[in-house]
Length: 421
Ligand code: UD1
Image 1 (cartoon, rainbow, N blue to C red):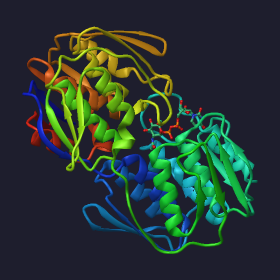
Image 2 (image 1 turned 60 degrees about the horizontal axis):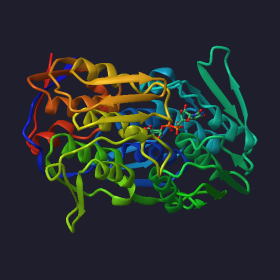
Image 3 (image 1 turned 120 degrees about the horizontal axis):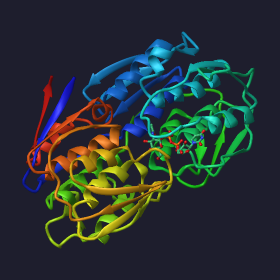
Image 4 (image 1 turned 90 degrees about the vertical axis):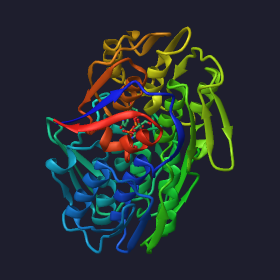
């Protein structure tokens, strides 16, 4: 099994180019199943999750060609199977997103239940509620190992989401593009990835309005056309490098990030004393100007503080003056990095959905694991400021979601290597 060896590093300095967004590209690849025409996708990050979804949509009938490292064409002249088998979906939660396009295009989808990060129960009832509202029939086996959804014809309908779920919003949006009539989604998620998916669907010929607000309206169309779309930059990767500048007291120029997508992370880093400047070349993040102090964080749906940046930010908070409180409102099991950080010398106490982080800790390198994708990123950041060597295992989680992670850190001066055991 591969590992990262990380050593205490000098403050990170230099520039880093942000890749295309993992969370935007996955639903867009699934949405390409809706159309018979060719979709060209640019700025696709080279990630394990992208490979996994490529295998799944290819199995279902898509012809996927990699034109160069970050450009793909996808064309699904016909759907060859309406069943997504367990061995293809269990590697990644987002695989479930093929159900909506399969249903809309063929009237049937049978999908085995997804895997992915174990950060909470991650139910799908909001997705299913949306499909039922559009007139589909939903069946699950007794143990919930698969879901089968069928419909003669989807009919547009009002869908109220009890929570602004990102996946459910994306899923219902995709299915509704081929339904008869309008589908307003209320309490829709407002994440930038939702807007990117809507832009992609509209380039294909769909009629989606209001993405990025709490009400999205989709008017069904008959068919789609060829399109060409560039994926938005990854705001969580950008946030991770912003926090890297802070934790190492470094000075990093972040290129290709969309500033408005990382406002909450920037605001919280600024509260801690980090200086962030917008320059013509990108966002300059400086942890080397002021003494850095504690702050409190609550994760919220966008535009609130993203749950995906919570664990890297917590690693940073262990190093500042004072104590901080972090409240995780989105996923009930997203503090798995706490025990790993504590093993390195952090002092973090969990009480339900809250964690108290006592600052100014002296971290020591030891053997730790990546318990999930973002927790893995948090451990890398902690390793950069810990004395000695941090041996981080189960890094496949990190490689699912960060393109050229080690190379990007090394370019900034970090001492980190990947070894195969
Ligand atoms: C997506 C992101 C993930 C991010 C999350 C929240 C992708 C591939 N993943 O995940 O990185 O952390 O958004 O920003 O884009 N929920 C229900 N019922 C449902 C669906 C969700 O109760 O039917 C709950 C979940 O259990 C969770 C909350 O809603 O507590 C948020 O989940 P959701 O927004 O759906 O996240 P994902 O789309 O799975």
